[in-house]
Length: 313
Image (cartoon, rainbow, N blue to C red; front, side, top):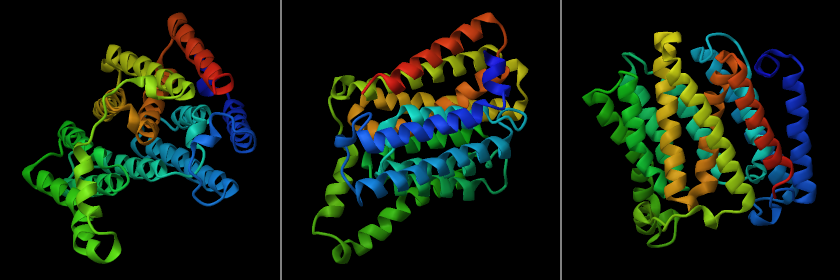
């Protein structure tokens, strides 16, 4: 099963066709909760531009894999896993604000991993948190992920006083522009209201989510946990640089899933970030794990993914 999933050349085109099929079914027949979305443009263009954004996300995952050799080779397993997660999470298909958060997060990953023992680490720290600052313009509570970003820079051996100051400046820059221009570009009090939302948290509880969202959450979490546990059990078999990168992935993934559990009302913004980390962790598992037990685990995950994709709405 593992060999078929990670090496068979037919898996990628089949996954591509299946993802496109779910997109058409979702757009035409409302598979997975079409009515829950606010129309941005028109239903047709929402799904069309949503497809473009998610395709860009899969490409950026592939670029991330290649640039930093997350699998030690040019294996496309991580991007394949991301594509399957996109097919499963039909609620991310229409164009929505969460897509801005997803793209900013992926760009920040590309920049952050390049900061490893780099002389340009302060520049990378500034860029990563600048992107987070833009994300908080649509979801203020994401501000708290700055703590995770700073710890990640420490894991990458890129955290210095200059990097820390650059992180603060990068995070604050979008708000500096908004604060200066708010009297002319927005209603009175909008800037202050937005800042107050950064500490506006809900009471928690996954019961506020739809069945599709709950099943997607547990499926992605299972994929992440299987990949992370397998990585730590076999950490000695990875190259030093790859270990550092996957430490960051595990940290980021654990933080995002914990944040979803604490604040499920932010699910639509946070789940795409969880998908990224689940895809990377599970892709590592399917590329390197061997034996009967990993085959059984992958089979169970694929069954759970298939049920969530086709039978839960």
